[in-house]
Image 1 (cartoon, helix red, strand yellow):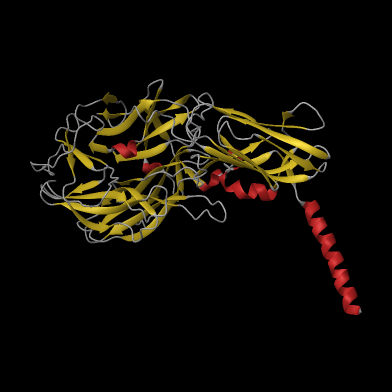
Image 2 (image 1 turned 30 degrees about the vertical axis):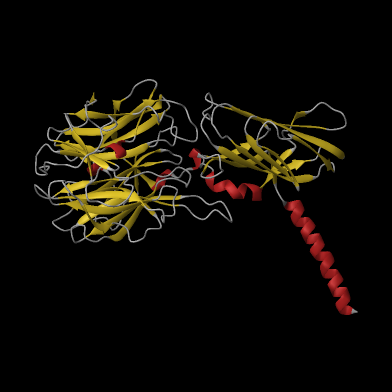
Length: 533
């Protein structure tokens, strides 16, 4: 009898506890969710809270390409009895309210459903919208009851809980006013516009290469019409041109060049017949995925494109990173597509070599010890005859089956003590975003005093350009050095840096600012000796 009373008492207490917990749930007005960069609801990009279900997207607000979204929370029943939900959209959408599902995939689908509700009941709600085909899109959700005219569903009938927010809170940008600036080092800089043209997007120096001969600097970039896009790059990818910018005074002034027979000029790659002289003082080499070009006059004219003959590595994703050791020999630091890599962009870095002036190439070594994490866009310096240091871009995409998790995007450093025949992990340099922006590649330079410096773009608030310095050949790194923190969008970076004869660093990158929203190419000149480590 006593045991029975105890059990009854425990059940009653547990019931009160559960009721108390339910009452303790905190609700906020609206629905919470995320925009995806793909309409199949993959690759989360942008945290979102909405207070009504009346939306229109297109070119004007930067949503004219393909994408998707998810919103979750609760719908508060407005009355007792039957309520009709009605969806208007020209795209695909799914509305899940409790156990009831309304899917709209084309104009022939039923776009309404009637549900029996209890007034003030909070019914779990999930909304999915798929913007296949791009262009203009709209999504409106109405409701009606008791013969009333239908109205747009909005707050206060839309709520989300802390648990709902927890699913996506990692995708939310930090409040700029709450960022601890004491964690950074600030340095005096000189910012110079390298290339800027109204109506055009200029970008990605890290993809296009950099070369320097003393105070003469040559850097590549892409030019394309500017097309505003919130979730992707704001450019017309079908209309791109590869250009070069040249400075003869250490980055103080620049001129723009569009050489013939260069990248994106439509040349068909062939095998090289006449050897490259890798010891030529005015040599420049440009890697472009599965082909390369070379110049003997500092990039004024180019020969190519040529194939990496003999390098049987499947699809190459090479950027420009090489080290010429004599007239006929050159190490190349490349990458290829490896589908075992756990990232949406499955590159893996490796070392290749030519000993006959570029007529043929051979695989030498993998630069990373595992093929499960993306490794690409290496930036390599030589410390001595056999010692190489290479910084590279990393990315890992966690399994999303149980809970949405952020990408991991960062920069690692690897080293070789046998001239590239083998590599081992040395250190992690820095994270490059919050897991929604695909990170940023590094540019590694050797300073005149023997220290190493890495520059890179940062794609989370505060968006900008950063650097770190190592006093011990890359084993450890300084606090982050802020070169720029005034970008107004995440689509910045892809730095290329060189060291001038006076020891100053010239860091080039693409950027967007309050006064110049369309992406442009900028150079920041700064002195690493002024950095107070």
